Image (cartoon, rainbow, N blue to C red):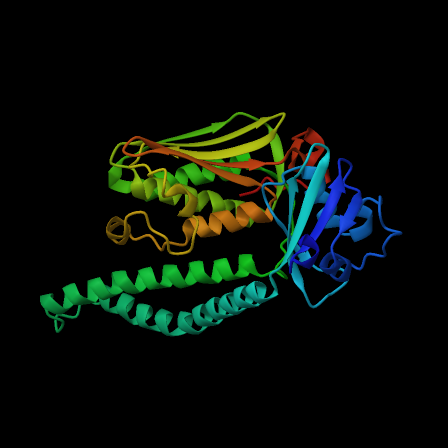
Amino acid sequence: MVSRLPDAIMLLDDQLRLDWANQTAVSWFGFRLPQDFQRSLVSLLNLPEFSQFIQSGDYKRSFDCVAPGAPAIAVRIRVVPFRQGQYILQARDVTQVKKLEQMRRDFMANASHELRTPISVVYGYLDMMMEDDNEGISQEWRLAIRQMHEQTYRLRQIIDDMMTLSRLEDPEYDEEHKFVELAPVLESAGNNATILSGDKNHMIRTEIESACVLYCNKKEIESLIANLVSNAVRYTPDKGLISIRWLVDAGGGSLSVSDTGIGIEAAEIPRITERFYRTDPARARETGGTGLGLAIVKRIVNRHQANLTVESQPHRFSIFTVHFPPERIRKNQKTSETAGVDSGS
């Protein structure tokens, strides 16, 4: 029965060597049986990304790739424990899913690009009218112009976030990574949080508990922190506490933003990084969020082989923590400038 399943199924031993494969697996992965039995699956597939996936040992997540023996097919691979000392590998055809995802990315990129110019023109004229002291504009119209100006500004933010998200989701988009000292980045984020807080008078605390540097794309990490901090400011009541923290230990680096805000219900947490998802739509409209900030954070986290965890209790606190793997961390030595460390703002 298993041999007739539409998915590719493989039985692996405790060393992840091939013990058995159904006909779909043979076709998609180009196996030669029985010669390939007892050979390491990593060597059979010869995919560096798959090797990293296996070495991570994190089989709770899946791995996507093009089927080596059938390049027109995109597959999603999962590895699950079977009997003692055995694993089952399942590969499912996700070609149509990938095509739909590409269509969605193309639509978001094209729509945001086409909308940006007309919205900028409208915003520019409204901005000019806001600054105009022409007494020919009645008080009633001044109120309408101010409201249009605010909503057009919000549209610009949504379009900018859509363009950022489209860029981050593009498989061919690749920005340079280098070792970056996070202290100036976090201090800048703290200063921006104070400005953003304004009359809400939040207490902003920045804690840097390590002199290590992070291998990353600096602009993306700045965007990640800015979105988390903006979220904290938006949903924390007046005079609340917002903390930005960087910690390094044997498990890697942890970058966290915590607040004493309204919190998130446990059932909502798995969905908060979805595009345009709002835990409280009415409050989100009131505070001016775009609904894309956490989606951008999630994409940046994935691009840095990191993990995002969220702890929260309603009406008490929220803690967003990004966990970076240890291979992206290095001690910040005095000779770091000659090794490509960027510590500028």
